[in-house]
Image (tube, rainbow, N blue to C red):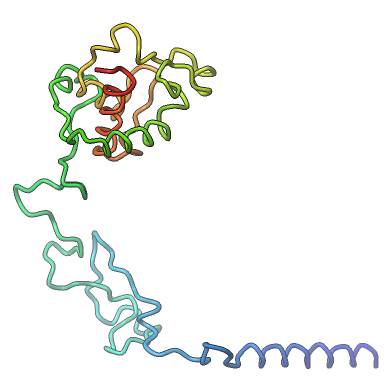
Length: 208
């Protein structure tokens, strides 16, 4: 009897919990309009599902097509992604072109001119960026005495030796692509920000 009583108790509690979880409350009306707006089927960029009945057994679409049909049939080449317009080059959000030089092409990089105009605001932003990305190794004053630099060793003293006379394009390239013990930062810092760091290094650290 005790076992039977326990089974009935658990069954009752389970049913009560299930019914209470189905009820509407607050801003939740207990149902949703246009479920496709909440659970949209994303386009596959490199392929198309052209069978409009694919996934019909699962579909709740208002257009009557299968749930898995997700193709833009107006696109060519049997893929949803459009190819770039011929003879065009993608640009970043700030309008700069992709940086094409390889890591070893330092001589070609040295002739590049800083495209960011030098202003007090740019220098202030360069200081912030230098502190964020560079000071841990090169130190706040650029002398290679940052906390991480002490552990790594071999960090450049930007105030000494041949580093003083390095062209801006050279510094930019090394930050972008890396050199020696310094890793590449091009995937972490946008080009415009690197050029601001270069301004700060040349103007405030190296006093050039």
